Amino acid sequence: RFYVANNTLPLTYSKTYDWMFSPHVAINKVFSRSFSVYGTYSKGYKAPTSSYFYIPSTGQVNTGLKPEIGNQFEIGTKGDLLNNKLSYQVAFFNAIFSNKFTAINVLNATNTGTLYTYVANGGKQNDKGIEFLVKYTAYQSAKGFIKSVRPFANFTYSNFKYVDYTFHTKSSAGVDSAINYNGKAVA
Image (cartoon, rainbow, N blue to C red; front, side, top):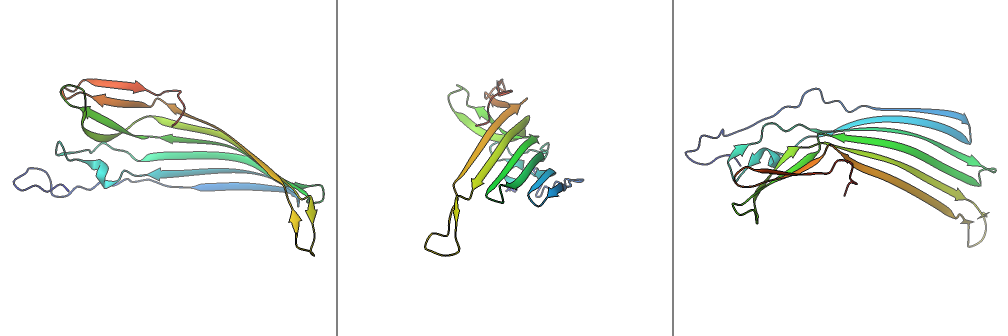
């Protein structure tokens, strides 16, 4: 992708991201056969793809990109009540994604169209939520055409917001126009 005859660009480019660990830790406390509480922590990375490093329109190598980092905490409980007829699951989670990738549009001289786009690291994304599931076994039989009737309900609440996240547009003269998404809902 980089090579152009008689060009001063390097023929190859490499980037190493050291010290990237993705731990997952979970603790589950079982109080009885029908009730438990758990907590988990997970961390993950999303490294930039090769297409993010090179800006074809300018011939520049985008060397300052960092991997996106995600940290998630979750606590919850699971249980079976009423002689295993009623079962439930409840989970509360918080996931924070930092070094979010954001596109920077470079506009033409009249600011009416995009000349090219490149990727940079932006702010964070904070995802908070609750998930709830309840099932009740209203009917169960080992014989007959209908083996069980198990109505259920689930509920999910998501509050996903940007934190210090900005979308940039630059004119061909290099004038930066930023739209601040801090505190706004994630698309």
